[in-house]
Image (cartoon, rainbow, N blue to C red; front, top):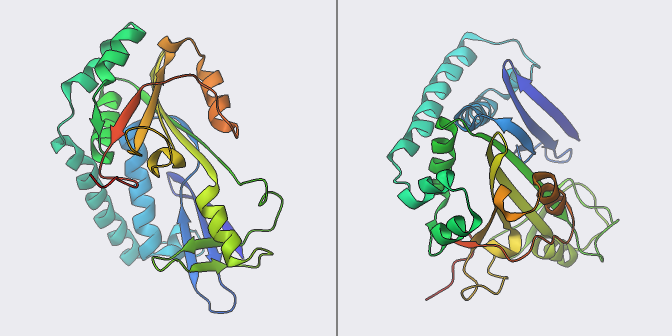
Length: 266
């Protein structure tokens, strides 16, 4: 059984509850949706707040139960925790060259700046927040496609591959565990983050291949791809490519991503 939940008071976020009718277990899935023109800090603060209250007082978070005093106290405590989480990125050192990216007016400048650049998830988040403080908004666009052999077949409501390689699934499916494993490993996924102000925009995007060591770049090093309004492709054109099964955006700068994905053994 799948129940979409959309808000808790002023917080808006996509959440799904997937209930196993046989065991009564509930799987809660947060976010993953596209969003447009949000303030970075506010967006991630609200996402943190919603996750926290959903995990502690789900009945109140979903509106199935009126707010209690305990729930209100939990919300305040979670709010403080989330504020501390957002503030923690103030301590992350952002490369000055990355900040300079927002001052560039030529494609060649951007390529030069990004040559040899190294990012981590924390550095990227800190940079998004820095950009937010400079008046940039944040948008995210994503897509997921299965291989031809999987397309059109019934997938379970949720499934995952455990550390031992075995598949855990909720809901009925016509696929074997081997096929579900293939669906996870061979699906095509792209996630793009845009920061933008006026006609200026910068896009950092990954594919599951680019973070899984499957792309032929520096011996499988996980990486971001970068493109901006200076590359001769419109914002809408880039989004359309992100949303397509096979994207074509030309030869783009690669930015090394550390502390995430399938890191190579050097």
